[in-house]
Image 1: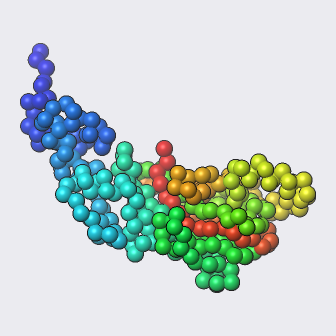
Image 2: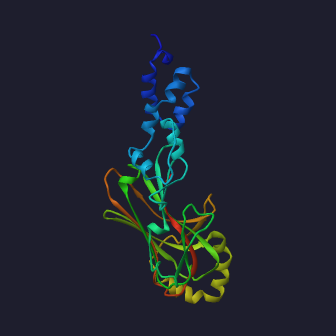
Image 3: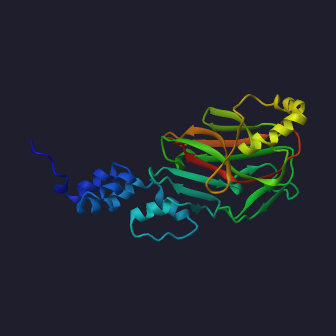
Length: 282
Protein backbone atom coordinates (compact mmCIF):
# COMPACT_ATOMS: atom_id res chain seq x y z
CA UNK A 1 0.00 0.00 0.00
CA UNK A 2 1.35 3.41 -0.97
CA UNK A 3 1.91 6.00 1.73
CA UNK A 4 0.44 9.46 1.29
CA UNK A 5 3.09 12.09 0.73
CA UNK A 6 1.84 15.13 2.63
CA UNK A 7 4.06 17.36 0.52
CA UNK A 8 1.85 16.49 -2.46
CA UNK A 9 -1.21 18.02 -0.78
CA UNK A 10 -2.36 21.45 -1.98
CA UNK A 11 -1.38 24.28 0.36
CA UNK A 12 -5.05 25.03 1.07
CA UNK A 13 -5.59 21.46 2.31
CA UNK A 14 -2.51 21.69 4.54
CA UNK A 15 -3.80 24.97 5.94
CA UNK A 16 -7.15 23.37 6.85
CA UNK A 17 -5.32 20.52 8.61
CA UNK A 18 -3.07 22.92 10.55
CA UNK A 19 -6.05 25.04 11.60
CA UNK A 20 -7.32 22.00 13.52
CA UNK A 21 -4.13 21.78 15.61
CA UNK A 22 -2.71 24.41 17.98
CA UNK A 23 -0.53 27.52 17.59
CA UNK A 24 2.66 25.72 18.74
CA UNK A 25 1.97 22.79 16.40
CA UNK A 26 1.37 25.12 13.47
CA UNK A 27 4.66 26.90 14.12
CA UNK A 28 6.57 23.60 14.36
CA UNK A 29 5.02 22.31 11.14
CA UNK A 30 6.61 25.13 9.18
CA UNK A 31 9.89 23.19 9.41
CA UNK A 32 8.48 20.26 7.42
CA UNK A 33 8.58 21.83 3.95
CA UNK A 34 8.04 25.06 2.05
CA UNK A 35 4.40 24.06 1.47
CA UNK A 36 3.86 23.59 5.21
CA UNK A 37 5.74 26.81 5.96
CA UNK A 38 3.51 28.80 3.63
CA UNK A 39 0.35 27.14 4.98
CA UNK A 40 1.43 27.71 8.58
CA UNK A 41 1.66 31.45 7.92
CA UNK A 42 -1.74 31.70 6.23
CA UNK A 43 -4.65 33.74 7.55
CA UNK A 44 -6.89 30.68 7.27
CA UNK A 45 -4.88 28.95 10.01
CA UNK A 46 -4.48 31.88 12.38
CA UNK A 47 -8.05 33.14 12.08
CA UNK A 48 -9.06 29.77 13.52
CA UNK A 49 -6.77 30.35 16.51
CA UNK A 50 -8.09 33.88 17.14
CA UNK A 51 -11.18 34.27 19.36
CA UNK A 52 -14.44 34.60 17.46
CA UNK A 53 -14.94 38.15 18.76
CA UNK A 54 -11.46 39.41 17.86
CA UNK A 55 -12.92 42.20 15.70
CA UNK A 56 -14.71 43.61 18.76
CA UNK A 57 -11.59 43.25 20.91
CA UNK A 58 -9.48 45.14 18.36
CA UNK A 59 -12.13 47.89 18.12
CA UNK A 60 -12.08 48.32 21.94
CA UNK A 61 -8.29 48.62 22.13
CA UNK A 62 -6.91 51.92 23.40
CA UNK A 63 -4.09 51.85 20.84
CA UNK A 64 -4.48 51.30 17.12
CA UNK A 65 -3.33 47.88 15.99
CA UNK A 66 -1.08 47.63 12.97
CA UNK A 67 -0.77 44.12 11.57
CA UNK A 68 -0.31 42.61 8.14
CA UNK A 69 -1.50 39.08 8.90
CA UNK A 70 -3.73 37.17 11.31
CA UNK A 71 -0.65 35.51 12.78
CA UNK A 72 0.81 38.90 13.59
CA UNK A 73 -2.46 39.94 15.20
CA UNK A 74 -2.52 36.74 17.25
CA UNK A 75 0.99 37.42 18.56
CA UNK A 76 0.06 41.03 19.37
CA UNK A 77 -2.91 39.83 21.41
CA UNK A 78 -0.65 37.47 23.37
CA UNK A 79 0.72 40.60 25.06
CA UNK A 80 -1.45 42.64 27.47
CA UNK A 81 -3.76 45.03 25.63
CA UNK A 82 -5.74 47.80 27.31
CA UNK A 83 -9.42 47.94 26.38
CA UNK A 84 -12.51 49.99 27.29
CA UNK A 85 -10.80 53.34 27.94
CA UNK A 86 -8.02 51.60 29.84
CA UNK A 87 -10.27 49.93 32.41
CA UNK A 88 -9.68 46.37 31.17
CA UNK A 89 -6.56 44.44 30.26
CA UNK A 90 -6.85 41.59 27.77
CA UNK A 91 -4.44 38.84 26.75
CA UNK A 92 -4.45 35.56 24.85
CA UNK A 93 -2.71 32.51 26.25
CA UNK A 94 0.02 31.98 23.66
CA UNK A 95 -0.08 28.18 23.55
CA UNK A 96 -3.87 27.78 23.42
CA UNK A 97 -5.46 31.08 22.39
CA UNK A 98 -7.63 31.09 25.51
CA UNK A 99 -8.67 34.54 26.75
CA UNK A 100 -7.92 36.24 30.04
CA UNK A 101 -8.95 39.62 31.42
CA UNK A 102 -7.96 41.89 34.28
CA UNK A 103 -10.71 44.18 35.54
CA UNK A 104 -9.14 47.37 36.86
CA UNK A 105 -10.02 48.73 40.29
CA UNK A 106 -12.24 51.29 38.52
CA UNK A 107 -14.29 48.39 37.11
CA UNK A 108 -14.93 46.98 40.59
CA UNK A 109 -17.36 47.89 43.34
CA UNK A 110 -15.23 48.77 46.38
CA UNK A 111 -16.85 49.88 49.62
CA UNK A 112 -16.95 53.70 49.85
CA UNK A 113 -14.12 54.03 47.33
CA UNK A 114 -15.43 57.50 46.39
CA UNK A 115 -14.68 58.82 49.88
CA UNK A 116 -11.22 60.47 49.87
CA UNK A 117 -10.99 60.08 53.64
CA UNK A 118 -11.10 56.30 53.26
CA UNK A 119 -9.51 55.63 49.84
CA UNK A 120 -7.04 57.38 47.61
CA UNK A 121 -6.96 56.86 43.84
CA UNK A 122 -3.46 57.24 42.52
CA UNK A 123 -1.15 56.23 39.70
CA UNK A 124 1.65 53.72 40.19
CA UNK A 125 4.43 53.18 37.64
CA UNK A 126 4.30 49.40 38.10
CA UNK A 127 0.57 49.21 37.33
CA UNK A 128 -0.83 48.49 33.87
CA UNK A 129 -3.73 50.83 34.63
CA UNK A 130 -3.76 54.61 35.06
CA UNK A 131 -5.18 54.34 38.59
CA UNK A 132 -5.16 51.99 41.55
CA UNK A 133 -7.10 52.25 44.81
CA UNK A 134 -5.22 52.45 48.11
CA UNK A 135 -7.09 51.92 51.34
CA UNK A 136 -6.43 54.57 53.96
CA UNK A 137 -8.70 53.25 56.68
CA UNK A 138 -12.00 51.40 56.89
CA UNK A 139 -13.71 48.86 59.12
CA UNK A 140 -16.05 47.30 56.52
CA UNK A 141 -14.24 46.03 53.40
CA UNK A 142 -16.03 44.69 50.34
CA UNK A 143 -14.63 44.19 46.83
CA UNK A 144 -16.91 42.94 44.07
CA UNK A 145 -16.35 42.30 40.38
CA UNK A 146 -18.32 40.65 37.60
CA UNK A 147 -17.77 39.37 34.08
CA UNK A 148 -19.95 37.62 31.51
CA UNK A 149 -18.98 34.14 30.34
CA UNK A 150 -19.68 35.06 26.70
CA UNK A 151 -16.57 37.28 26.76
CA UNK A 152 -14.41 34.34 27.86
CA UNK A 153 -13.23 31.20 26.08
CA UNK A 154 -16.00 28.57 26.11
CA UNK A 155 -15.87 25.30 28.07
CA UNK A 156 -12.87 26.43 30.09
CA UNK A 157 -12.12 26.31 33.81
CA UNK A 158 -11.20 29.81 34.97
CA UNK A 159 -9.71 31.12 38.17
CA UNK A 160 -10.50 34.56 39.63
CA UNK A 161 -7.63 36.37 41.38
CA UNK A 162 -7.56 39.61 43.35
CA UNK A 163 -4.40 41.52 42.31
CA UNK A 164 -3.01 43.70 45.10
CA UNK A 165 -0.04 45.02 46.99
CA UNK A 166 0.34 45.43 50.74
CA UNK A 167 2.01 48.70 51.72
CA UNK A 168 4.70 48.92 54.39
CA UNK A 169 2.31 50.78 56.71
CA UNK A 170 -0.54 48.26 56.36
CA UNK A 171 -2.53 47.35 59.47
CA UNK A 172 -5.55 45.29 60.45
CA UNK A 173 -5.83 43.40 57.15
CA UNK A 174 -5.16 39.93 58.51
CA UNK A 175 -6.64 40.10 62.00
CA UNK A 176 -9.48 37.90 60.77
CA UNK A 177 -9.91 35.79 57.62
CA UNK A 178 -11.62 37.48 54.69
CA UNK A 179 -14.48 35.66 52.99
CA UNK A 180 -14.17 35.02 49.26
CA UNK A 181 -16.75 33.82 46.79
CA UNK A 182 -17.28 33.13 43.09
CA UNK A 183 -20.88 32.81 41.93
CA UNK A 184 -22.20 31.67 38.56
CA UNK A 185 -25.82 30.75 37.98
CA UNK A 186 -27.03 28.85 41.03
CA UNK A 187 -23.51 27.75 42.02
CA UNK A 188 -21.49 29.60 44.64
CA UNK A 189 -17.96 28.64 45.71
CA UNK A 190 -17.02 30.12 49.09
CA UNK A 191 -13.70 30.11 50.89
CA UNK A 192 -11.57 32.09 53.35
CA UNK A 193 -8.27 33.90 52.94
CA UNK A 194 -5.84 36.18 54.73
CA UNK A 195 -4.57 39.37 53.12
CA UNK A 196 -0.96 38.55 53.84
CA UNK A 197 1.89 36.79 52.06
CA UNK A 198 3.49 33.49 52.93
CA UNK A 199 6.46 35.34 54.48
CA UNK A 200 4.15 37.36 56.69
CA UNK A 201 2.31 34.15 57.51
CA UNK A 202 5.47 32.58 58.90
CA UNK A 203 6.96 35.58 60.72
CA UNK A 204 4.57 38.24 61.92
CA UNK A 205 1.81 35.77 62.64
CA UNK A 206 3.93 34.03 65.28
CA UNK A 207 4.37 37.35 67.10
CA UNK A 208 0.68 38.18 66.88
CA UNK A 209 -0.34 34.72 68.04
CA UNK A 210 1.92 35.15 71.04
CA UNK A 211 0.26 38.38 72.20
CA UNK A 212 -3.24 38.31 70.69
CA UNK A 213 -4.09 34.63 70.32
CA UNK A 214 -7.31 34.78 72.35
CA UNK A 215 -8.69 37.81 70.50
CA UNK A 216 -7.74 36.35 67.09
CA UNK A 217 -9.47 33.09 67.87
CA UNK A 218 -12.58 34.98 68.93
CA UNK A 219 -12.59 36.98 65.67
CA UNK A 220 -11.89 33.90 63.57
CA UNK A 221 -14.88 32.11 65.07
CA UNK A 222 -17.16 34.66 63.37
CA UNK A 223 -16.09 33.40 59.93
CA UNK A 224 -17.02 30.07 58.37
CA UNK A 225 -14.53 27.29 57.74
CA UNK A 226 -12.23 27.56 54.73
CA UNK A 227 -8.74 27.02 53.38
CA UNK A 228 -7.36 30.32 54.77
CA UNK A 229 -5.46 31.04 51.56
CA UNK A 230 -2.72 33.69 51.54
CA UNK A 231 -1.26 36.01 48.93
CA UNK A 232 1.28 34.72 46.42
CA UNK A 233 3.75 36.63 44.27
CA UNK A 234 3.13 37.24 40.58
CA UNK A 235 5.69 37.64 37.81
CA UNK A 236 4.59 41.25 37.24
CA UNK A 237 5.63 42.39 40.74
CA UNK A 238 2.12 42.33 42.23
CA UNK A 239 0.56 39.77 44.55
CA UNK A 240 -2.60 37.77 44.03
CA UNK A 241 -5.21 35.95 46.05
CA UNK A 242 -7.36 33.27 44.46
CA UNK A 243 -11.03 34.06 45.03
CA UNK A 244 -12.28 30.83 43.45
CA UNK A 245 -12.87 29.10 40.13
CA UNK A 246 -15.70 28.44 37.68
CA UNK A 247 -16.46 26.73 34.36
CA UNK A 248 -17.36 29.08 31.51
CA UNK A 249 -19.55 26.62 29.57
CA UNK A 250 -21.16 27.69 26.32
CA UNK A 251 -23.92 30.05 27.49
CA UNK A 252 -23.94 33.62 28.69
CA UNK A 253 -24.00 33.93 32.46
CA UNK A 254 -22.77 36.57 34.87
CA UNK A 255 -19.85 35.55 37.09
CA UNK A 256 -19.77 37.43 40.40
CA UNK A 257 -16.50 37.52 42.35
CA UNK A 258 -15.95 39.02 45.77
CA UNK A 259 -13.80 39.43 48.86
CA UNK A 260 -15.36 40.64 52.09
CA UNK A 261 -14.01 41.35 55.57
CA UNK A 262 -17.02 42.69 57.46
CA UNK A 263 -17.09 40.68 60.67
CA UNK A 264 -13.99 41.87 62.49
CA UNK A 265 -15.06 45.54 62.73
CA UNK A 266 -11.43 46.56 63.29
CA UNK A 267 -9.88 49.40 61.31
CA UNK A 268 -7.61 48.34 58.48
CA UNK A 269 -5.52 50.09 55.85
CA UNK A 270 -2.61 49.81 53.45
CA UNK A 271 -4.26 47.57 50.84
CA UNK A 272 -3.53 48.62 47.24
CA UNK A 273 -5.99 47.19 44.70
CA UNK A 274 -5.07 46.92 41.02
CA UNK A 275 -7.97 44.72 39.98
CA UNK A 276 -9.31 41.18 39.55
CA UNK A 277 -7.80 38.83 36.97
CA UNK A 278 -9.87 36.11 35.33
CA UNK A 279 -7.61 33.60 33.57
CA UNK A 280 -7.71 29.94 32.48
CA UNK A 281 -6.44 27.43 35.01
CA UNK A 282 -3.76 24.96 33.98
